Each structure stands twice: as structure tokens, then as C-alpha cells.
Length: 415
Image (cartoon, rainbow, N blue to C red; front, side, top):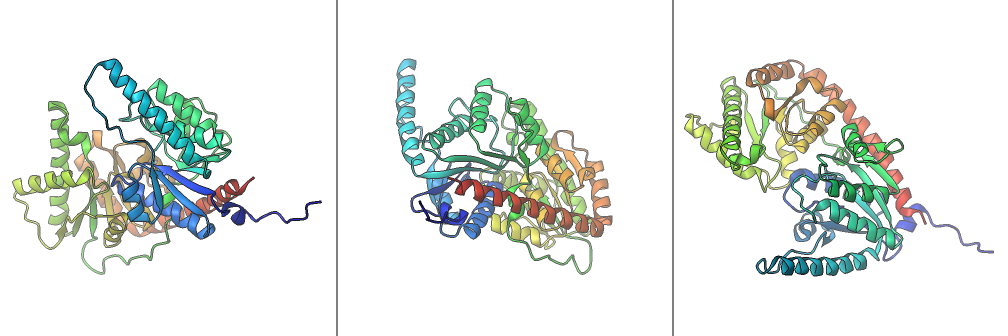
């Protein structure tokens, strides 16, 4: 009779050579994605301190430096010559992809569990045939072939229009032993893709499990300090005359908002959420404000954050937030700041509904500047009550995430 005691879940997950891999679009200078990864890593390191963690990501070098974790690329670099006959280019692509399958299968041999870790990863927006939906399928299949588990942890879903991409995503989701979505909106989109979600979990975004912030006191005197977030709306207007007109209107509305807030005595801080895209928008905004004769005084600052930690530090210095990027809105809520969402995706509205702030939403495509100022006045007047509501919702989100992490540890540790 084997009398050897069964290992504890933590001990099982920490066996030598059994890696827990976190998979996602990390390292690409999107500060929201980086704070999501940081939240997951923090929780796993606290719960499984001896576990070997690995990140499968878009830019491994950046991730290793930012998060102190071993990292490997999701896909092999395209490389290679782009000239020659079409059949020759197709042959090169097929050869490169065959080699990458061998690489992924080799890497998956050492993976105990593959965690698709938050973010709006379930989408085909901007993706080609061999984009994220296909790469996700590849890694899930390779992990399952070697006996590893696949878990979708508080993932978001956005547009899924391509039939081929929907097939890749549907196939990947069916290989999972656990599926959790960060909102009902995402679960509904997945269900439309052909996956039954009745037994799946709806759990808030992982960033709500970042270390609890120390509440910053509101402004002692004077008008509340305000953060205004940027977004590369309409591709910065580079897609033709119609896109240029939409982007020009966006800058006009944003400039008017900032000038009005400063004129009313508010200190204004401009924030970004993506280093790869929003810094250029910031330069455009600066030029627009100069063209309108706006002179930045001590009450106005627009120095961009270089990391998610700097972004959080900037948000800690304000009282109210008006933002578009999903994680700008989320981090404001995490810090207990009343916020207005001027969104580019339905995910923002879903997030605001979770905390009872659906009355403080607009979309970028239908932005009404006068209504926005009215919403801001209402936000300012109701700030004290809203902070209580936001704090309670954030605490509830943290508790729900704790239960999800317990389930993840159990799944990772199962034999």
C-alpha cells in the first residue's frame, strides 16, 4: 500500500520543472496590459512562492526587465525576404510556421498550466491569419498535448468577426479546464462565437487585485484636481480625410475641456495609457492647445508616465478622472477616484456598470462636449458619495478575484 501523503496544492504546483506560464500581449508598452500582468504575478508569487513562472508574450525582453520573469515569444519573428513569387513566399511562411510549431511543442513540454491572463485578448481586431487567435490556439493545443492545463483568467472579449479567427478562439476555449470573463459583455460575445458559457465565471479584471492603495485625501482647498486621459482616436486621423476630420474634432473637444477646467480653477493633469500610441497624441494635443493660445501654467501638467507604476502615482495626485483607456478608468476606480468614461469600446460601459457609474459614460464616436461638462459638474457635486460606492465595489471585486485565484491554484495543482 502506498502510504505517501498527497502533496498540498502549493507543493504540487511547485514541483521542479513544472512551469506556470502566463500568456498574453505583454511587453508592447500598453500600461493597462502591464498592470494586469503585474497583478497576476503578484498573486501567484504570494500564493505559490516556489513556483517556476514563465511569461509567453509579445516582447519578452521588455517583460523580463519590467516584471523580473523569464519570458519567451508567442510567435517566431516574421523575418525573411518578402520578394519572389507568391508560391515561394507561401512556402517560406509554411516552413517558418512548421519550425515555430516545433518550438512551441518543445516549450509546452515544461508547462504545467497555461494561464491566459486577463486583457481583451479574445479578438481578431487588427489580426491577420496568423495573429493572436491562431497563436492562442497553437499554444493551448501544444499545452494540452503534453498534459498541461489551460485556464482563461478574467479575459476580455472584443470584436470577433472573421470566421477563421472565431474557429481558432472557439477551439482554444474548448481546451480550457477553467474559463473566467471579466464582464458579462465578454461572456456574451464568447457565447455568440459558439461557446456555452453557462458554467463559466464572470470575475472582474485582474488589475483590481493589485496591492490595496493607500487612500489619498481630496484637495484640502480649492477646486478638485482632475486627470484627463488621452486615446489615439481614429488612428490619429491618418486613415484619410474622414478619419482626419474625426481626430481634429476629438482634439478640439479635448482642448476645450482642458481650457474650461483650468479656467474654472481646476488643476489638470493629462495622462496616457499606451506608450506606443498615446505619446504622439499628446504631442498633437500640445500643438492644438498652443494654436488656441493656451499657456500651460503651474496648474497644468502633461508629463507622460513611463510605466504603470508611474501612471498609478499620477492618478493618486488627482481627485476626479475623465478617461478613455479601459485601464485608466479601472485604475481610477481602484484608487477610489470618481471617473467619467469617454469610451471607444463597450468594455468601458461594462466596467462602469459594475460599480454603478453607468450615468457617467459617453462614447468617443458620439461625444457631446456640453453633456460632458454637465456630467463633470454632477461628478464633482456627488464625489463624496461616489467614493464610498466605488470603494465598496472595488473591495467586492477584490474578494471575487481572491476566490478565482484559489480556483486557479487548485486547477494548477490538480494531477
